[in-house]
Image 1 (cartoon, rainbow, N blue to C red):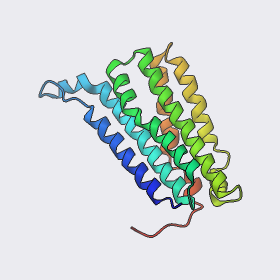
Image 2 (image 1 turned 30 degrees about the horizontal axis):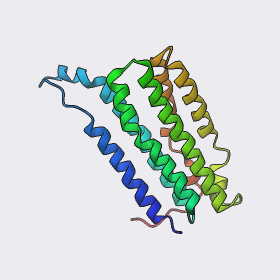
Image 3 (image 1 turned 30 degrees about the vertical axis):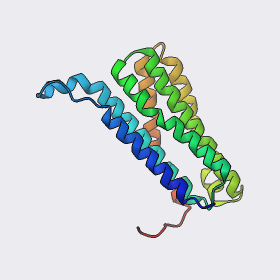
Length: 195
C-alpha cells in the first residue's frame, strides 16, 4: 500500500486541529489593547499547542518521507496518533481558560503524553515494516528525545497537582527540545522533487 493517502489524511486532520484551536479563541470584549489581557492565557495555550501540532506535523512528514510503504498496522497506529492529537484543542482551551487549575494542566499533559506514546508506536511500526536494516531504522535509532519527552510529560502531570506553573514550564521545555529541527531523518534521506 502506498503512503500517499495516509499523508494526505494526516495533513487534513492536523489542519482541522489547528483551525479548531484558532476558532476557540474568543474575541475580547473591548477595543483597546488592555482587553487582550483577558485572553492572554488562552492565547499562550494556543501558541504552545500550535507549536506542538507543528512539531508533530514536521516529524510525521519526515517519518513518512523516509518510509517506502504502509500496511494496516501502520494505518491504525497513525489513527491512534491522530486521535490523541485531535484532543489537543479541547485540552488547550480547558487549560487556557482555567489556568492555574490542577486538573486542566494535568489533562493537557496527559494528552501530550498519550500523543508522544502514539508517535513512538507509529515510528516503531514503520521501522518494523521497513526492516531493522532500513534507512528509517538507522535514522530513528533509539529515539532518546522521544523517551525523554515521555518521562518529562509523566513528571509534569504529577507536578500539576503541586505546581501547575512548573508543569507548563516542562511542557514548554519539551517543545523547545523538539522545535530544534530533528536532523536524524532529514540528513539520511535524499531530497525529493521540488514541488
